[in-house]
Image (cartoon, rainbow, N blue to C red; front, top):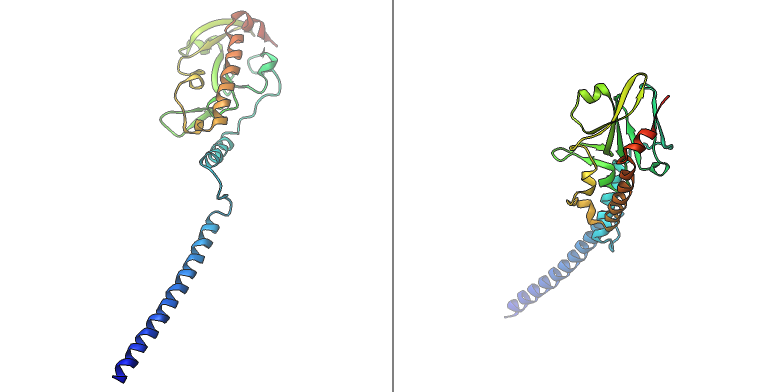
Length: 219
């Protein structure tokens, strides 16, 4: 009988000590979990919302697409072809001219939104800066390509130069109805609307052939 009592007491002591061990282990595990959570979120507030995360992603994307320099003047000079072209002063900060091929100068719109500053190629991860508004082409360049709305705007060094557009390179991505993921951000949507208004204002200038002829000058 006495022996059975001792065995019972021993079992109770073992159970008590085991319970203490479990409590201590749980306490340690909780501390580790908290430390891990804090370490993973050193730079992220626990109050950060989904919009905050989206905004960070958009800012990172805009940083990636921020490599285009814009002219500080409204006068474009093509020294190789011998002419200058005077844009309206309110174009400064919203355009640039790609003249990698001087006889085929590409005038591009450059807005504040991602959609308005980068042409995202649909079937690849490639992109190019700006959206094409129109071309200034030598007669030879016109004859070697396929263009729309071809109009003579001037002459330089005995060579005719033309205004032209193309249907597959235009401002249509800016005015398109499709929405990119980064436009879930309200501030980006507002920039798209702002760019659309600016682009429409700029289009009024080059839709007038008289304006284009006056802007083109031989040097």
